[in-house]
Image (cartoon, rainbow, N blue to C red; front, side, top):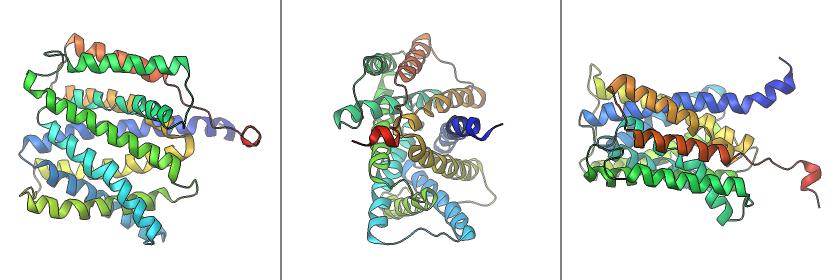
Amino acid sequence: MSAPLFTRLYPYLLVFIIGAVWGGTFSLVKIATSQGAHPIGLSFWQAFGGGVFLWLFCAVRGKLPPLNKTALQRYIIIGILGSIVPGTLYFYSASHVPAGILAVTTTVVPLLTYGFSLLLRIDTCQPKRALGIVIGFVAILLLLAPGATLPSQGNTVWLLLALLAGVFYTFENLYIDQFIPQDTDMVALLTGSLLVASLGLLPLSLAQGAWVSLQLPFGHVEWAMLGMALASCIAYTLFLMLIKLAGAVFASLSTYVITVAGIFWGMVIFDETHSLWAWAAFVLLLIGMALVTPREKPTEEQASP
């Protein structure tokens, strides 16, 4: 394989790996919450476990996360937008929403990323991409229709919480795309962000009586949390790298694979089935994402005045 061809395919390979790894976490979350683990406690262990794994990796390669003022500000912002708030929202929703439907909610991220990019004038309006936003909105209405995707109408609020998590992931994508320098060590950035997030979640979990104790020998909860931490730190690191490599909109397209993998694992592990309305919403969301194609970064000649 020639170098230029590999260079072109590399971003798409990252998209596939990110989606395949991250898609399995929805079922792991559901396993843990179904065994009674508190969402805030799970958020702590996912952030802390992932942070420790990555810190060890940074230590081995001799590049620990910096602790200057600018770095700490970045850790706090990414920790809040990418871990503390959306992670907790997803974990609260997991015990009320099928794992496959949770995976489907991630498809709002690329649509929202483009929508907010327009509002912030980061991107330009194009009819095809705007149509993708409209189609995605229709798909969300189908997901929220009573009896369409959830066992009972009372679970709609939990689905809304999962969708709200996507809003925070969108803000994180845009922040990284616009405010993190291209040459930033993304592994160190994520390591610091996860550890800072865990510091924020620790007192909250203790105050709320949400602490999840680790028991030996490991049971379903402990193995699920270990899997969540490993999968998240691997996929998250690759995702941050992809944002700087190909832009926030392109990176968010990894939700294609995340959604398919999440639905697949939900069907295999929990024997989940979905209504025709749910499948229709899923297809519409895929169409919407396909229309919201990645923007091409300008070359040096195009960028020069």
